[in-house]
Amino acid sequence: MTATSDFLLADARAALRRRLAEPDRTDLSRAFAAWVLREPGLAAEFASLVELAASRKGAQQDFQTVAILGYGSEAGILTGEQVEALRKGLRRQAGREPLVDSVPMAFCLDAVGILGVALGVRIIADAKTTSEVVRWAGRFLKTSYEMERTEDWQRCLFAAGDRQLGSPLNLPVPTSAAVADLRTALITRGVLGTVDDTQATVDAEQTLRLAYLEPQADLPGDRAMLRLAAVEFVIRATAPIVTSKAARSVGLGSSLSPRDASVHDVIGKELFNTHTNAEIMKDLKLRKRLLTECKLESGDATKRSIDRIRQAKGYPLSRAVANKRASRN
Image (cartoon, rainbow, N blue to C red; front, side, top):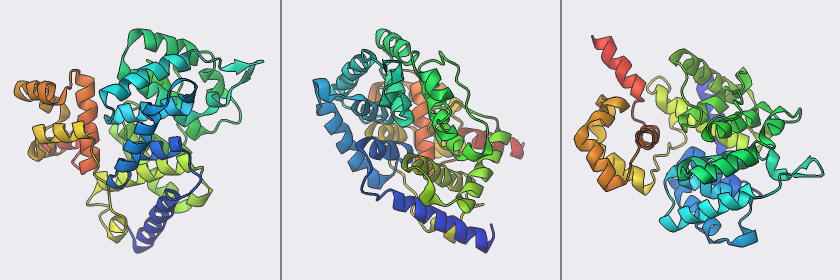
């Protein structure tokens, strides 16, 4: 990177971080930022927002409340009682009428909220709840995605939500360069599946280009948090290539949920640096400890936890471990 691009990147990151302090952000927007960024300074606020959301009962348990719990569930920070509050909220939400006189309710267009609800459905993994929410979302989600006023960054979130529900609508992820940062952030969080290394590299480069060239103050708040998460991930993933004064000007986060922290302790730093996800998950002793000590029962849940830890701690991604080993042979 040149001195000019270093300066531009540092300026963009500072501008994006200022957006975190905006006073008019909703509880859902604050929870979403904490979910996508996973930084130590946001962990206490995230837990507080989840606790407040779980305490709401009946009519107070609105769409945004359920979405907050959904993000908390994917981050692994819900207690058993809070998980039950999420389950009840999802069932309640699935009973709400999405259209009034053929006009969609406001929540139908809330892409951040839809993704949170869908994440909650995936984590709860209850067949009846999933069926009810899929039927409910099927009444409006495709229309919301296709509306002319819907922006591509929102379509990325709608598509990610569809994937959490099992892709019943097969909503495509926008492929334009303008949302490369969205794809990067959502893939990092494990909600868009995977892409080949070439496309990931192209999106990473475009993520930084967008940060250099576009004024961050003009972005919608939630959009800005996704860009910040993408930029931070690219810097971390490409170190030492982007290890410069600009990359260090804002501290990188390494927050882990209690369960992810336990998973980290079981696996250990050395294995994260030398083994792929598949190799870690094949170790029978580790699998037994992850089941008994961390309550990780499925391979998918284990992989998501490992990926979150790699991202938060700055460990090499699984494919980077494999590529480094292949280059030695």
